[in-house]
Amino acid sequence: MTTSTLLNQNRTFLPRESDRKWFVIDAEGQRLGRLAVTIANILRGKVKPTYTPHLDTGDFVIVINAEKIAVTGRKSSQKLYRRHSGRPGGMKVETFDKLIKRVPERILEHAVKGMLPKNTLGRQLFTKLNVYAGPNHPHAAQQPETLAIKTIPGEF
Image (cartoon, rainbow, N blue to C red; front, side, top):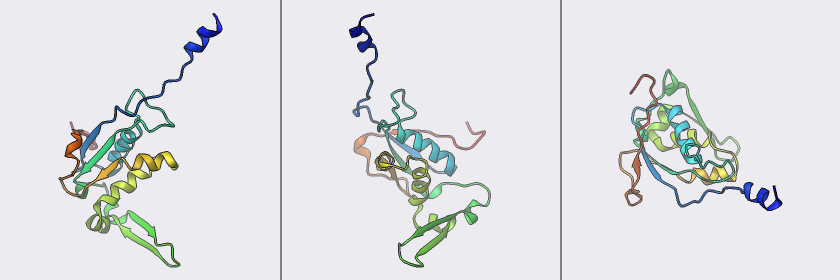
């Protein structure tokens, strides 16, 4: 083989950004952790054959009905969410039940953010997630596809 033949065989494929899609996911009755894993994989682009770990090849995700997301066992009363104001004694602790009544979007955002890379790429991927408490969203112009996800075992 000649040198020019070897150079042509080892070209690097870089995916284009133009093949991004928008998906709508209904979180009503879905399990929090299993739904968050699926959303994180879509945001990263792991469900595509063009997945590249160091690039943003994922799609946009719109989640509706975040206020109706479910957890199993006693997590609703035992799972704690912590935040800190940055000032001495500024730690705030809330249970799942209290946070879902106050800001239901934050629960799913927190779960998905923990499953994304902790770097610049992860912060960029997180901006493609849109979570809404109710059934309405303002992204009709993007013509999102409805994505049915089954997070409850035994459900068809």
